[in-house]
Image 1 (cartoon, rainbow, N blue to C red):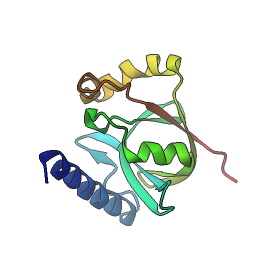
Image 2: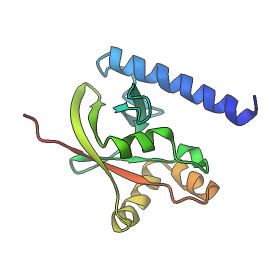
Image 3: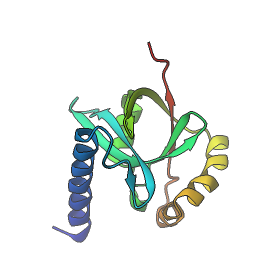
Image 4: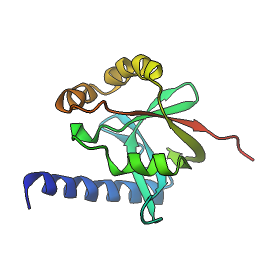
Length: 147
C-alpha cells in the first residue's frame, strides 16, 4: 500500500465515523470541524445505489449551501462529486435540521464570484487548486420547497 492509498483510507475512515456521529447525534456532534461549518450530505452511490452519507465543509450563500469538490488537490474529482452529478436531489443535514436540496455545478461566472469568498472561508482551497491541473468544481445546493 502506497502513502496515497493509506491517506485515502484514513480520510474515508474518518469521514465514515464523522457521518455516523453527526447523524446519530441528531446534528449535535459534527456540525463543525476546526471551527468550520460542516454539512452531512445523504448521497446515493451512482454505481451501487447504496447510501453514501458524506460530511463536507460548506459556505452559506443566501439560502444556498456552497461546497467544493477539492479532494485535497487530487488530480481526480472526489467520488461524492460524481454521485451528486448522477443524483442531484438529496437530503442534507446542517446541525439539527435535515432538508432536501437540488445540487448544480456553479456557472463560470458564479464560480469566479464565489471562489475568492471560498478561499477566505477556508484558505486551504487555494493550495488545493495550486496542487492540481483540474479546475476544482464548486457546487451550489439549493433547498427544495417543503411540502
